[in-house]
Length: 309
Image: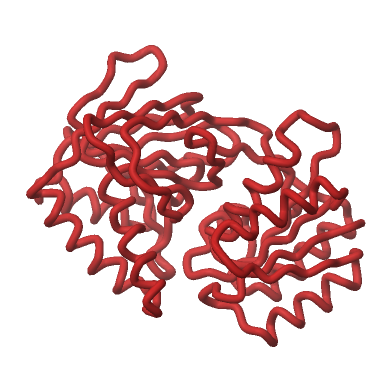
């Protein structure tokens, strides 16, 4: 089997020695080429090119952003249902949150994850998962408009200056943007199939799995029960007052978190979600800032990708 290992050498929890060990282990089972990404978008470009050249398996080693790029590269070159045998994806976590890898049930340690991937390859075992699309961009676990996307954008800028994307940095950045949102609140309108539009949302998050993300080792839950097979879920807030935000965040951080309330908007198993704003607002997908948009259509695509696991 021809395989490409895509490595982000800047990912939070990867090392040169660890990458060499992983490559050696994988090369014992597949005909392996290794690519180390050099710039944003490189993983998507290289993956698409490799898939068009006949690569049958792409192994992503990095954080959720690297995995997102690899997924977009695979599906750009081989869209769902375009071929009876689309390329396989394997994931080796190397970031700080590793949300998609955890949703697949993989260990957080990349060497342990590699052992599971090799065992699955030996048994020819994989699962088919659903994904989401934000307009033309695929995402694996979540996308958001407003507050959470502003936080992602700020943390990206801090990382570009050499700062670590730690849970403390995320928490401080979230507080700063919360105060900014209180002064200049986002005004989002959500359109859902079979319902009247819901206007006045201050935050809109679209999920493809649960948990929504992780704060260190702690799961953050918006839509418990959301999974990789049943469509998209929506989580929104109609108010950013402390009386809404504090109990909602407290519930989101509980082990069995199940946030609800008068100002909480939640829906599950949705095929389509459209979010609009009178002014452009920040958009993030899988923790990757995509700029500002005033209208985004989120669609669920079932059986979009085959994953070795």
